[in-house]
Length: 105
Image (tube, rainbow, N blue to C red; front, side):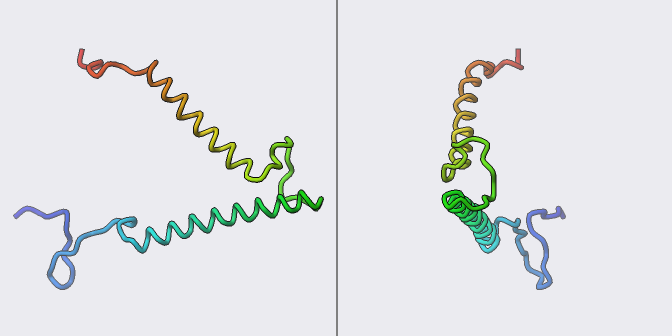
C-alpha cells in the first residue's frame, strides 16, 4: 500500500488536510493588518516630521536636500526608482534575450 503524502491521519481516524500558514484566512488577515499598521505608523511619523519642520521644532530626520522636506518624498522617490528599474529591465531583455532553442543547438 502506497503512502498518501497529501493527507495526514488525525486522531479521529479520518483524513485531515495540511494547510500552509498563508492558506488560512485568519493568518492572511493578521499579516495584512500588521502591514497596514506599519504603513500607518510610517505615514504618521512623516506627518509629525512635516509639522515639526513647519513650526521650526526639532525634526525626526535632517534633510540633506530641500526636496527631502516635501511630504512623502521617499514614497515618490521609491516609486520612481522601481518604475525606472522595470523600464530599464524591459530594454535589457531585448538586448540579452536568447532564442528559445539557444541551448538545444
